[in-house]
Length: 379
Image (cartoon, rainbow, N blue to C red):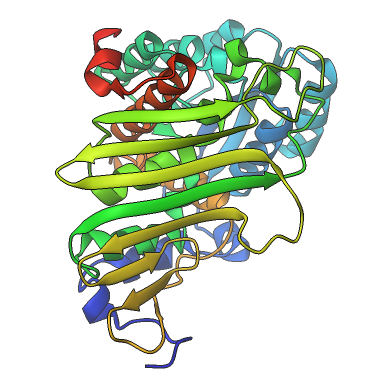
């Protein structure tokens, strides 16, 4: 088979993905033409419209049959800029998220604040009866993760976590191919994320452990979510080493700039992962990668390529749905609200990915092998 041709849909899945992809892939122009007869507008608010929040607000504004009715941020410049970007919706503006939750014209809330605020805000949104989309991670301590998880379980509204990669190809279709046995039983994953440059220095909270949870919690949960879905499980134990070796600015920075993890999922399933903020541009082996090893071959998740044993060239997984994964995730959040169904990235996957990150952090900070049972005991 030609290396640029996707594997047959029958061999790949046999069900379901085509229809889902068609819905998820609807273009912005087509979304704008959605008929008003389909349903009433969903009235949405957002808490936090800085860097990440601005992108989420744009996705909300582009989503069909969604009206932005409320915006909250403690920074007046952020607030005014955000309001101007959705001026046609005439949103109410707030500096206190509690006041936003008192606002009646609100069905769903997106949270895009620093990580240490996620628990308090997510619990408050869910307990108010609204639907909640919360940026990752769910929280930065095990007890706080548990609090959000319990709030989501008792809530009337749905909860979606912002690990958005799994809403688009090649991540979504690669994981589905693996789950459907395309490479047989998975026994090993080799992954890394080596970042070029540095985190944005105008967001001080990203450099402080007590606000971001360290880089492993704030950033690597994206990969950990993917690994958990591939293994359909959580790690049993983790060992790791890391340091703050090369990056010390801005003042107050205390996050790791590099680390490695050895992860045991049990049942002869292991993972090797490394993460850094010290990479140099134009190095071909750096960036982000997830290589999955199975009985029948290997799958490169990031490239969507399957290498079967004995084959002379790789095959491709289905490369749809394509497009911006944040837009795909936000569109599906509102679609889940209308269709009364659970999101793909819900409180279960959010809890699992965050606990993975917290277990890895505990292993790095304490310099020993740490079992998941120890972390769960803290909850």
